[in-house]
Image 1 (cartoon, one colour):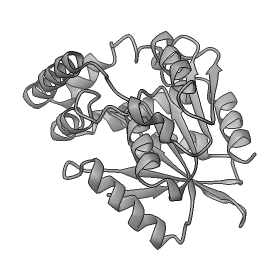
Image 2: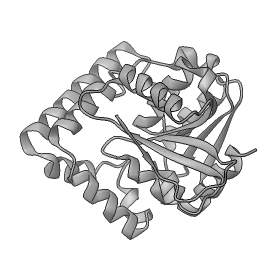
Image 3: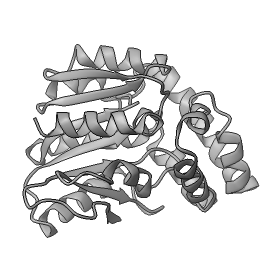
Length: 253
């Protein structure tokens, strides 16, 4: 796994922040958030088709040692939020604060988990049989994703889209089969074990994940929910300036 350094110039006292991307995304998706901040040192992991959650955890452990980082802020968007939450539960000693954007702890019902696994396997088959471009075009029509084209800055969105088209079908299939909500562990029963301050971010148009975040707030001891105006699922990019300011202010309190 490689970890991208996204900060160009930061102060010696800058706090490290490690951000996990969502499905079809990449580490560079967080670059617009990192720009203009000299008090947060942004890093973004990018994993390969060889990796699973356990390997990502080990790779982050190694990265922290290499960079001499004792504690960091961990942030995750959507699929990446589940990975960040897993790390916070597995390695609480390394997590200063936790930021989850449009994220869910998982699916509680066994039947629903199985149905989601089957649906994701079917999507993985489509990616492998029809190619990444066809899959991405189809995925962009998902109601959860459609607001991105409307709200994200055009240049940022076009760059993200080109990176998505460059993904291999194998990468897309791997993420669906290894990091899908139906496959990953259900973390709802363990939210009470999250020991660090936690910020839950959702867009005002993302009703499903707003309700999830509100419920999570009742289970995580030190959690706050923030709803971002004029945004959907990818609230951190759909209302970029406000989200950048909010994340930095909360992170450095």
